[in-house]
Amino acid sequence: MSVNARLNLKMDAAEKDLVARAADLMGTSMAGFVRTAAKEKALVLLDRESRVSLSQHDFEAVTKALENAFVPNKALKAALSQTGKVHHV
Image (cartoon, rainbow, N blue to C red; front, side):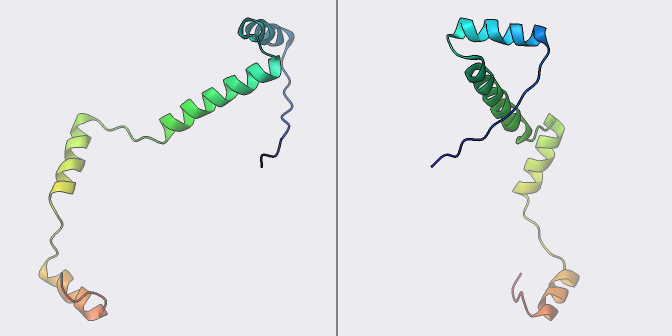
């Protein structure tokens, strides 16, 4: 079940006129237009910010690191065996 929440928004007369004209063109109310526009913008922003962009050089470095599995040296193997948590590495 969805719970309605209210958002109060103040804008100057020119902004209100702009939104009203756009809402009219879309055949919706100002509230509906603002709600739809805000949701669309929020989804685009959240999608963009949830991605990591790498340069070609960085992408190749990450790919190389993932392809080459880590192999612990003797000292690390000894330290791990002393903890009793890892028996075979």
